[in-house]
Image 1 (cartoon, rainbow, N blue to C red):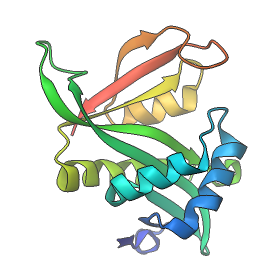
Image 2 (image 1 turned 180 degrees about the vertical axis):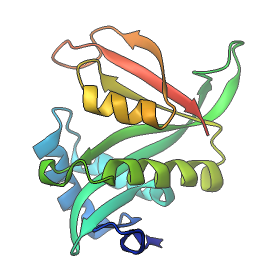
Image 3 (image 1 turned 60 degrees about the vertical axis):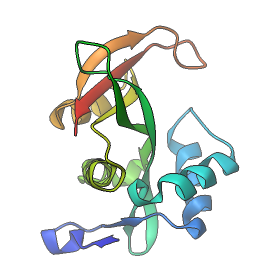
Amino acid sequence: MELAEKDKGRDFTLRNARMDDIDQIIKINRLTLPENYPYYFFVEHLKEYGLAFFVAAVDDKVVGYIMPRIEWGFSNIKQLPSLVRKGHVVSIAVLEEYRRKGIATALLEASMKSMKNDYNAEEIYLEVRVTNYPAIALYEKLNFKKVKVLKGYYADGEDAYLMARQL
C-alpha cells in the first residue's frame, strides 16, 4: 500500500515495509533507539503483521518505520477485566534529521488504521520511556493516555509509561 503523502504537501511517502527494507529498518533502529532486536525479530513481525508494518521514505531512502504486532490480552483501557484484540507498537523510529516533519504521526496513523481494519484490533498500546518527552507529546496528541508506570522496564533501569487508546 503506497500512501501519496507528497500529495498532501509532505516530502515523504509511506508504504508497507518489504523484506528488502529490513537492513535499513535495523540501521534506523540501531542509530535511534537503545532497544535493539535481532534480525529474525524484524522478519517475523513483517511476515506476521506486514499490513500494519510501515516505512517512511524520502527520495526512496527509508527514514522511519513502525513495527507492530497484534495480541490477545486484557484490555489496557476498560475498567472491567476483558480480553480484547489489541495492537502493540513494538518499535517506532525516525532518523534524527527527518524528525518534526509529521513522519512519526503519519506512521502511527497508518499502522493504527491497519490494525483496526485489517487485524480487527479494538485498542492499541505501547511503552515509552518516562523521559522521552517528544514521543509522549506525540502519543498524547493522538489521544493515547498514560495507563500505568512500568518500573524498571528498560534494560538500563529506566521506567516506562504504558500508554493506550481505543481504535
